[in-house]
Length: 257
Image 1 (cartoon, rainbow, N blue to C red):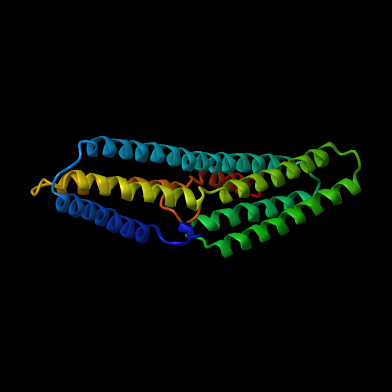
Image 2 (image 1 turned 135 degrees about the horizontal axis):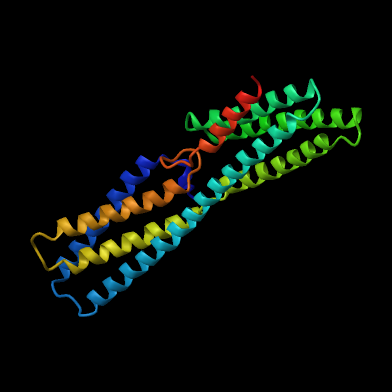
């Protein structure tokens, strides 16, 4: 199975546009060679274009829902980090300052990934570092709980760490939840057939059939590219705003002054 996520978006757009336009040319050649058109051709063309529109709307909704899930997970994680930082400030020294430093590093790992288009290996390495930092935070909480049993801030801090761990798992799941490649390939297949029918319907018309059909093919290729862009959490052009994490990092910096 071809994984479209493994290929850069400009390459996918260029190849898909060439194939779509080639399909229109093939359809036009086939229509011109047959000479006469069946009366069913306009009906078939309208049906396949309607199916293409339905598939585009269905796939766009899939990718947009995944984009929204990643955005909501990021906001939830930023809120959980802020909550953990507030409870960390209530811990006795030196656990308070150490926990704030670990939380600062925890946020910085995520922000570093947004400075560039991270590969899958870099994302996995960042997740491993986050897990080590979470374990270090947990050790800080355990140390406070052992020293002063019944301390309310320690219990609240432990609870916030559990929430942070759960949200990290949800955010990872949201980032890995992609539109299946088979759906995108089926969408491309329907687009090729639809544009071929469009070219076929214009077969007997020897002049000026290309501008409208070519514009339609270009728009279809661009919309399918947009769907794939929304579905790429780290390598696409459309990215979830990292402002909640930036604000969390700024708050941590003020707490540590």
